[in-house]
Amino acid sequence: MKQITLLALLIISVLVGTSQTNNLPPVDKSPMDMCYYPGNYPVLKIQDKITEPAVARVIYSRPQKNGRLIFGELVEYGKVWRLGANEATEIEFFKAVKIGDKKVEKGRYTLYAIPMESSWTIILNKDNDTWGAFKYDEQKDVLRTTVPVQKLNEAVEALAMTFEKSDSGCNLIIAWDNIKASLPISLK
Amino acid sequence: MTKLACTFFLCCFLFIACTNGNEKNRDQTEKKPDTAIVHTPPANPYAPIDISPMDMSYFPVNYSQLKMTHDLTTPPVMRVIYSRPHRQGRTIFGNLLKYGERWRLGANEASEIEFFQNVTIQDKKVNAGRYVIYCIPYQDKWTIVLNNDLYSWGLKIDSTKDLVQFEIPIKKTTVDFEYFTMVFQPITHGAELVMAWDDTEGRLPINFQETR
Image 1 (tube, rainbow over the protein chains, first blue to last red):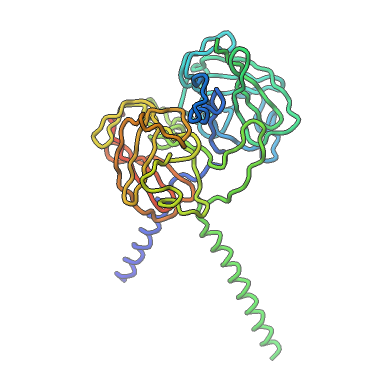
Image 2 (image 1 turned 90 degrees about the vertical axis):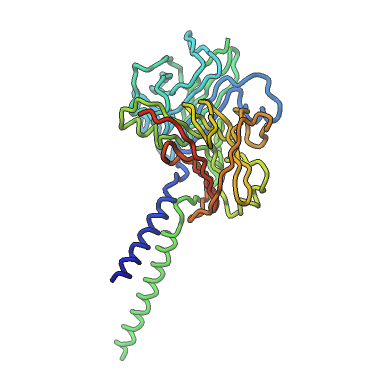
Protein backbone atom coordinates (compact mmCIF):
# COMPACT_ATOMS: atom_id res chain seq x y z
CA MET A 1 0.00 0.00 0.00
CA LYS A 2 2.78 2.34 0.99
CA GLN A 3 4.58 1.54 -2.26
CA ILE A 4 1.49 2.37 -4.30
CA THR A 5 1.14 5.71 -2.51
CA LEU A 6 4.79 6.49 -3.19
CA LEU A 7 4.41 5.53 -6.83
CA ALA A 8 1.30 7.71 -7.14
CA LEU A 9 3.13 10.65 -5.55
CA LEU A 10 6.05 10.14 -7.92
CA ILE A 11 3.75 10.12 -10.95
CA ILE A 12 1.92 13.22 -9.74
CA SER A 13 5.16 15.11 -9.11
CA VAL A 14 6.46 14.20 -12.57
CA LEU A 15 3.17 15.36 -14.14
CA VAL A 16 3.16 18.61 -12.17
CA GLY A 17 6.82 19.18 -13.05
CA THR A 18 6.12 18.71 -16.74
CA SER A 19 3.12 20.99 -16.79
CA GLN A 20 5.09 23.77 -15.09
CA THR A 21 7.78 23.65 -17.71
CA ASN A 22 5.06 23.58 -20.34
CA ASN A 23 3.57 26.61 -18.67
CA LEU A 24 5.93 28.88 -20.59
CA PRO A 25 4.07 30.88 -23.23
CA PRO A 26 3.17 29.26 -26.56
CA VAL A 27 3.51 31.27 -29.76
CA ASP A 28 0.54 33.55 -30.16
CA LYS A 29 -1.98 33.17 -32.95
CA SER A 30 -1.95 36.94 -33.45
CA PRO A 31 1.81 37.43 -33.55
CA MET A 32 3.39 40.65 -32.36
CA ASP A 33 5.29 42.85 -34.76
CA MET A 34 7.17 46.13 -34.79
CA CYS A 35 7.70 48.88 -37.34
CA TYR A 36 9.92 51.93 -37.32
CA TYR A 37 10.17 55.26 -39.04
CA PRO A 38 12.48 55.47 -40.90
CA GLY A 39 11.31 52.07 -42.23
CA ASN A 40 13.60 49.12 -41.46
CA TYR A 41 15.63 51.34 -39.15
CA PRO A 42 17.38 48.43 -37.32
CA VAL A 43 18.46 46.82 -40.61
CA LEU A 44 19.69 50.13 -42.03
CA LYS A 45 21.54 50.66 -38.77
CA ILE A 46 23.68 47.54 -39.07
CA GLN A 47 24.30 48.34 -42.74
CA ASP A 48 25.53 51.84 -41.81
CA LYS A 49 22.86 53.33 -44.06
CA ILE A 50 21.09 55.56 -41.57
CA THR A 51 20.45 59.06 -42.80
CA GLU A 52 18.21 60.28 -39.99
CA PRO A 53 17.65 59.18 -36.39
CA ALA A 54 14.74 56.92 -35.42
CA VAL A 55 11.56 58.99 -35.09
CA ALA A 56 8.84 56.53 -34.17
CA ARG A 57 8.04 52.89 -33.71
CA VAL A 58 4.86 50.90 -33.27
CA ILE A 59 4.54 47.59 -31.43
CA TYR A 60 1.30 45.77 -32.20
CA SER A 61 -0.20 42.32 -32.48
CA ARG A 62 -1.58 41.12 -35.77
CA PRO A 63 -5.01 39.47 -35.79
CA GLN A 64 -5.95 37.62 -38.97
CA LYS A 65 -9.07 38.11 -41.05
CA ASN A 66 -9.75 34.36 -41.24
CA GLY A 67 -12.62 34.79 -43.68
CA ARG A 68 -14.50 37.19 -41.42
CA LEU A 69 -15.91 40.56 -42.41
CA ILE A 70 -13.93 42.96 -40.21
CA PHE A 71 -15.21 46.54 -40.28
CA GLY A 72 -18.80 47.14 -39.29
CA GLU A 73 -19.01 43.52 -38.16
CA LEU A 74 -16.17 42.09 -36.05
CA VAL A 75 -14.95 45.61 -35.32
CA GLU A 76 -18.09 47.64 -34.74
CA TYR A 77 -18.45 51.16 -36.06
CA GLY A 78 -18.36 53.88 -33.43
CA LYS A 79 -16.67 51.81 -30.74
CA VAL A 80 -13.12 52.07 -29.42
CA TRP A 81 -10.99 49.40 -31.08
CA ARG A 82 -7.57 48.39 -29.85
CA LEU A 83 -5.95 48.47 -33.29
CA GLY A 84 -4.41 45.08 -32.74
CA ALA A 85 -4.77 42.14 -30.39
CA ASN A 86 -3.57 41.16 -26.93
CA GLU A 87 -1.34 43.83 -25.39
CA ALA A 88 -2.56 47.31 -26.29
CA THR A 89 -0.87 48.73 -29.38
CA GLU A 90 1.96 51.07 -28.49
CA ILE A 91 3.43 53.98 -30.42
CA GLU A 92 6.62 55.61 -29.28
CA PHE A 93 8.09 58.88 -30.48
CA PHE A 94 11.82 59.32 -30.00
CA LYS A 95 11.38 63.07 -30.43
CA ALA A 96 8.47 65.50 -30.22
CA VAL A 97 6.20 65.41 -33.29
CA LYS A 98 3.01 67.09 -34.45
CA ILE A 99 -0.24 65.31 -35.24
CA GLY A 100 -2.90 67.59 -36.68
CA ASP A 101 -2.12 70.88 -34.97
CA LYS A 102 -1.11 69.29 -31.71
CA LYS A 103 2.38 68.80 -30.40
CA VAL A 104 3.03 65.30 -29.07
CA GLU A 105 5.94 64.98 -26.65
CA LYS A 106 8.57 62.31 -26.99
CA GLY A 107 7.44 59.15 -25.20
CA ARG A 108 5.29 56.03 -25.29
CA TYR A 109 1.55 56.11 -25.93
CA THR A 110 -1.23 53.58 -26.37
CA LEU A 111 -2.91 53.77 -29.75
CA TYR A 112 -6.64 53.20 -30.30
CA ALA A 113 -9.09 53.87 -33.13
CA ILE A 114 -12.82 54.43 -33.43
CA PRO A 115 -13.62 53.18 -36.92
CA MET A 116 -16.58 54.60 -38.84
CA GLU A 117 -17.62 53.74 -42.34
CA SER A 118 -15.72 56.53 -44.08
CA SER A 119 -13.32 57.80 -41.41
CA TRP A 120 -11.46 56.71 -38.29
CA THR A 121 -10.78 58.63 -35.13
CA ILE A 122 -7.25 57.82 -34.00
CA ILE A 123 -6.57 58.15 -30.28
CA LEU A 124 -3.28 58.55 -28.42
CA ASN A 125 -3.72 57.69 -24.76
CA LYS A 126 -1.21 57.79 -21.94
CA ASP A 127 -2.29 54.64 -20.06
CA ASN A 128 0.53 52.36 -21.20
CA ASP A 129 1.33 48.66 -20.64
CA THR A 130 -2.32 47.69 -20.78
CA TRP A 131 -4.33 45.00 -22.56
CA GLY A 132 -6.67 45.78 -25.42
CA ALA A 133 -9.25 48.51 -24.98
CA PHE A 134 -11.10 46.85 -22.14
CA LYS A 135 -10.12 49.49 -19.61
CA TYR A 136 -9.90 52.39 -22.02
CA ASP A 137 -10.16 55.67 -20.12
CA GLU A 138 -10.98 58.75 -22.16
CA GLN A 139 -9.61 60.94 -19.35
CA LYS A 140 -6.14 59.72 -20.27
CA ASP A 141 -6.36 60.73 -23.93
CA VAL A 142 -3.51 62.85 -25.21
CA LEU A 143 -5.13 63.56 -28.54
CA ARG A 144 -7.83 62.50 -30.97
CA THR A 145 -7.71 63.12 -34.67
CA THR A 146 -10.00 61.99 -37.48
CA VAL A 147 -8.60 60.64 -40.73
CA PRO A 148 -10.40 59.48 -43.88
CA VAL A 149 -10.21 55.81 -44.87
CA GLN A 150 -9.60 54.31 -48.26
CA LYS A 151 -11.12 51.11 -49.67
CA LEU A 152 -8.67 48.52 -50.94
CA ASN A 153 -9.30 46.23 -53.89
CA GLU A 154 -7.55 43.33 -52.29
CA ALA A 155 -8.18 42.26 -48.71
CA VAL A 156 -5.24 42.35 -46.30
CA GLU A 157 -5.26 39.10 -44.27
CA ALA A 158 -3.27 40.18 -41.20
CA LEU A 159 -3.62 43.65 -39.69
CA ALA A 160 -0.61 45.58 -40.99
CA MET A 161 1.07 48.80 -39.92
CA THR A 162 3.93 50.55 -41.60
CA PHE A 163 5.33 54.07 -41.94
CA GLU A 164 5.75 55.83 -45.25
CA LYS A 165 7.61 59.05 -45.91
CA SER A 166 5.56 62.20 -46.56
CA ASP A 167 6.35 65.84 -47.34
CA SER A 168 6.01 66.94 -43.75
CA GLY A 169 7.31 63.76 -42.08
CA CYS A 170 5.65 60.40 -42.27
CA ASN A 171 2.30 58.67 -42.35
CA LEU A 172 1.42 55.69 -40.23
CA ILE A 173 -0.42 53.33 -42.56
CA ILE A 174 -2.90 50.96 -40.95
CA ALA A 175 -4.52 48.33 -43.17
CA TRP A 176 -6.77 45.37 -42.52
CA ASP A 177 -9.34 43.58 -44.63
CA ASN A 178 -10.33 46.05 -47.36
CA ILE A 179 -9.71 49.26 -45.41
CA LYS A 180 -6.65 51.46 -45.16
CA ALA A 181 -6.19 54.48 -42.92
CA SER A 182 -3.28 56.87 -42.83
CA LEU A 183 -2.24 58.98 -39.85
CA PRO A 184 -0.10 61.99 -40.87
CA ILE A 185 2.76 62.75 -38.48
CA SER A 186 4.59 66.03 -38.94
CA LEU A 187 8.26 66.28 -38.05
CA LYS A 188 8.49 70.00 -38.76
CA MET B 1 -19.24 -22.72 -36.29
CA THR B 2 -19.79 -19.86 -38.80
CA LYS B 3 -21.29 -17.85 -35.98
CA LEU B 4 -18.15 -18.43 -33.95
CA ALA B 5 -15.94 -17.42 -36.92
CA CYS B 6 -18.03 -14.30 -37.49
CA THR B 7 -17.74 -13.32 -33.84
CA PHE B 8 -14.00 -13.94 -34.02
CA PHE B 9 -13.58 -11.71 -37.12
CA LEU B 10 -15.82 -9.06 -35.65
CA CYS B 11 -13.70 -9.05 -32.50
CA CYS B 12 -10.51 -8.82 -34.58
CA PHE B 13 -11.99 -5.96 -36.58
CA LEU B 14 -13.08 -4.12 -33.46
CA PHE B 15 -9.69 -4.70 -31.85
CA ILE B 16 -7.84 -3.27 -34.88
CA ALA B 17 -10.26 -0.35 -35.14
CA CYS B 18 -9.77 0.45 -31.48
CA THR B 19 -5.99 0.21 -31.61
CA ASN B 20 -5.92 2.49 -34.64
CA GLY B 21 -8.07 4.92 -32.76
CA ASN B 22 -5.74 4.81 -29.79
CA GLU B 23 -2.76 5.33 -32.05
CA LYS B 24 -4.36 8.47 -33.43
CA ASN B 25 -5.25 9.73 -29.98
CA ARG B 26 -1.75 9.10 -28.76
CA ASP B 27 -0.31 11.04 -31.69
CA GLN B 28 -2.49 13.96 -30.81
CA THR B 29 -1.76 13.95 -27.10
CA GLU B 30 1.97 13.53 -27.63
CA LYS B 31 2.17 16.57 -29.83
CA LYS B 32 3.88 19.20 -27.72
CA PRO B 33 1.77 22.34 -27.26
CA ASP B 34 4.83 24.45 -28.02
CA THR B 35 5.25 22.85 -31.43
CA ALA B 36 3.75 24.59 -34.42
CA ILE B 37 3.77 23.49 -38.00
CA VAL B 38 5.64 25.87 -40.24
CA HIS B 39 3.32 27.34 -42.83
CA THR B 40 3.74 30.21 -45.17
CA PRO B 41 1.51 33.11 -44.17
CA PRO B 42 -0.45 34.82 -46.95
CA ALA B 43 1.27 37.70 -48.75
CA ASN B 44 0.75 41.13 -47.23
CA PRO B 45 1.46 44.25 -49.29
CA TYR B 46 2.30 46.40 -46.26
CA ALA B 47 4.14 44.18 -43.81
CA PRO B 48 4.48 40.41 -44.18
CA ILE B 49 3.99 38.24 -41.11
CA ASP B 50 7.35 37.12 -39.86
CA ILE B 51 8.32 33.47 -39.64
CA SER B 52 9.84 34.21 -36.20
CA PRO B 53 7.04 36.19 -34.58
CA MET B 54 7.74 38.85 -32.00
CA ASP B 55 6.56 38.48 -28.44
CA MET B 56 6.64 40.41 -25.19
CA SER B 57 6.87 39.37 -21.52
CA TYR B 58 6.29 41.59 -18.51
CA PHE B 59 7.09 41.38 -14.83
CA PRO B 60 4.81 41.23 -12.90
CA VAL B 61 3.84 38.29 -15.12
CA ASN B 62 0.92 39.20 -17.40
CA TYR B 63 1.03 42.77 -16.11
CA SER B 64 -1.18 44.15 -18.88
CA GLN B 65 -3.84 41.48 -18.34
CA LEU B 66 -3.75 42.06 -14.59
CA LYS B 67 -4.36 45.72 -15.28
CA MET B 68 -7.73 44.81 -16.81
CA THR B 69 -8.99 42.99 -13.76
CA HIS B 70 -7.20 44.82 -10.92
CA ASP B 71 -6.65 48.45 -10.08
CA LEU B 72 -2.90 48.33 -10.39
CA THR B 73 -1.28 51.48 -9.09
CA THR B 74 2.34 50.42 -9.51
CA PRO B 75 4.01 50.44 -12.90
CA PRO B 76 5.51 47.23 -14.29
CA VAL B 77 9.05 46.38 -13.13
CA MET B 78 10.38 45.26 -16.49
CA ARG B 79 9.57 43.83 -19.86
CA VAL B 80 11.40 42.02 -22.61
CA ILE B 81 10.59 42.24 -26.35
CA TYR B 82 12.06 39.51 -28.55
CA SER B 83 11.41 37.46 -31.64
CA ARG B 84 10.86 33.71 -31.45
CA PRO B 85 12.84 31.56 -33.88
CA HIS B 86 11.85 27.91 -34.06
CA ARG B 87 13.99 24.85 -33.93
CA GLN B 88 12.60 23.09 -37.01
CA GLY B 89 14.43 19.85 -36.28
CA ARG B 90 17.84 21.48 -35.94
CA THR B 91 20.26 21.02 -33.05
CA ILE B 92 20.55 24.50 -31.62
CA PHE B 93 23.37 24.74 -29.09
CA GLY B 94 26.86 23.92 -30.29
CA ASN B 95 25.51 23.60 -33.82
CA LEU B 96 23.22 26.37 -35.11
CA LEU B 97 24.57 28.57 -32.31
CA LYS B 98 28.33 28.15 -31.93
CA TYR B 99 29.81 28.07 -28.46
CA GLY B 100 31.73 31.23 -27.63
CA GLU B 101 30.02 33.31 -30.32
CA ARG B 102 27.53 36.10 -29.72
CA TRP B 103 23.88 35.08 -30.02
CA ARG B 104 21.11 37.65 -30.26
CA LEU B 105 18.72 35.82 -27.92
CA GLY B 106 16.01 35.96 -30.52
CA ALA B 107 15.71 36.80 -34.20
CA ASN B 108 15.38 39.89 -36.38
CA GLU B 109 15.45 43.08 -34.27
CA ALA B 110 17.89 42.87 -31.36
CA SER B 111 16.11 41.67 -28.22
CA GLU B 112 15.31 44.47 -25.85
CA ILE B 113 14.89 44.52 -22.08
CA GLU B 114 13.51 47.54 -20.28
CA PHE B 115 13.68 48.15 -16.54
CA PHE B 116 11.08 50.64 -15.30
CA GLN B 117 12.98 50.95 -12.01
CA ASN B 118 16.59 50.39 -10.89
CA VAL B 119 17.44 46.72 -10.43
CA THR B 120 20.38 44.70 -9.13
CA ILE B 121 21.78 41.74 -11.04
CA GLN B 122 24.50 39.65 -9.40
CA ASP B 123 25.27 42.54 -6.99
CA LYS B 124 25.66 45.02 -9.85
CA LYS B 125 23.27 47.95 -10.04
CA VAL B 126 21.53 48.41 -13.38
CA ASN B 127 19.76 51.74 -13.85
CA ALA B 128 16.18 52.01 -15.03
CA GLY B 129 16.22 52.15 -18.82
CA ARG B 130 16.20 50.19 -22.01
CA TYR B 131 18.97 47.85 -23.11
CA VAL B 132 19.76 45.37 -25.84
CA ILE B 133 20.20 41.93 -24.28
CA TYR B 134 22.29 39.18 -25.86
CA CYS B 135 24.05 35.96 -24.93
CA ILE B 136 27.32 34.15 -25.50
CA PRO B 137 26.49 30.46 -25.05
CA TYR B 138 29.10 27.95 -23.86
CA GLN B 139 28.75 24.24 -23.25
CA ASP B 140 28.31 24.65 -19.50
CA LYS B 141 27.30 28.30 -18.96
CA TRP B 142 26.00 31.40 -20.69
CA THR B 143 27.28 34.95 -20.59
CA ILE B 144 24.39 37.42 -20.66
CA VAL B 145 25.27 40.93 -21.84
CA LEU B 146 23.38 44.23 -21.54
CA ASN B 147 24.31 46.61 -24.31
CA ASN B 148 23.47 50.23 -25.16
CA ASP B 149 23.25 49.94 -28.94
CA LEU B 150 19.46 50.21 -29.09
CA TYR B 151 17.09 49.87 -32.07
CA SER B 152 19.48 47.61 -33.88
CA TRP B 153 19.15 44.36 -35.79
CA GLY B 154 20.41 41.35 -33.87
CA LEU B 155 22.92 40.08 -36.39
CA LYS B 156 25.49 42.77 -35.80
CA ILE B 157 26.18 43.57 -32.19
CA ASP B 158 28.41 46.53 -31.38
CA SER B 159 30.29 45.16 -28.38
CA THR B 160 31.97 48.51 -27.76
CA LYS B 161 28.56 49.51 -26.39
CA ASP B 162 28.40 46.64 -23.88
CA LEU B 163 27.38 47.90 -20.47
CA VAL B 164 27.70 44.91 -18.19
CA GLN B 165 27.83 41.13 -18.41
CA PHE B 166 26.79 38.26 -16.18
CA GLU B 167 27.64 34.58 -16.13
CA ILE B 168 24.79 32.20 -15.45
CA PRO B 169 24.63 28.42 -15.15
CA ILE B 170 22.48 26.49 -17.61
CA LYS B 171 20.54 23.27 -17.32
CA LYS B 172 18.82 20.71 -19.52
CA THR B 173 15.06 21.11 -19.72
CA THR B 174 12.60 18.26 -19.19
CA VAL B 175 10.72 19.16 -22.37
CA ASP B 176 12.09 20.47 -25.65
CA PHE B 177 11.21 24.00 -26.66
CA GLU B 178 10.32 24.33 -30.33
CA TYR B 179 10.12 28.13 -30.09
CA PHE B 180 12.69 30.21 -28.24
CA THR B 181 10.97 31.44 -25.09
CA MET B 182 11.67 34.27 -22.65
CA VAL B 183 9.52 34.85 -19.59
CA PHE B 184 9.89 36.17 -16.05
CA GLN B 185 9.27 34.00 -13.02
CA PRO B 186 9.12 35.37 -9.48
CA ILE B 187 11.86 34.58 -6.92
CA THR B 188 12.46 35.99 -3.44
CA HIS B 189 13.28 39.73 -3.79
CA GLY B 190 12.85 39.75 -7.54
CA ALA B 191 12.33 37.66 -10.62
CA GLU B 192 14.31 35.47 -12.95
CA LEU B 193 14.42 36.01 -16.67
CA VAL B 194 13.99 32.47 -18.00
CA MET B 195 15.48 31.87 -21.45
CA ALA B 196 14.70 28.46 -22.97
CA TRP B 197 15.22 26.88 -26.36
CA ASP B 198 15.62 23.32 -27.59
CA ASP B 199 16.71 21.34 -24.52
CA THR B 200 18.54 24.11 -22.64
CA GLU B 201 17.54 26.93 -20.31
CA GLY B 202 19.33 29.71 -18.50
CA ARG B 203 17.94 31.92 -15.73
CA LEU B 204 19.13 35.45 -14.98
CA PRO B 205 18.14 36.48 -11.43
CA ILE B 206 17.07 40.13 -11.20
CA ASN B 207 16.59 41.76 -7.80
CA PHE B 208 14.61 44.89 -7.08
CA GLN B 209 12.82 46.78 -4.36
CA GLU B 210 9.22 45.67 -4.21
CA THR B 211 6.91 48.67 -4.14
CA ARG B 212 3.66 47.34 -2.84
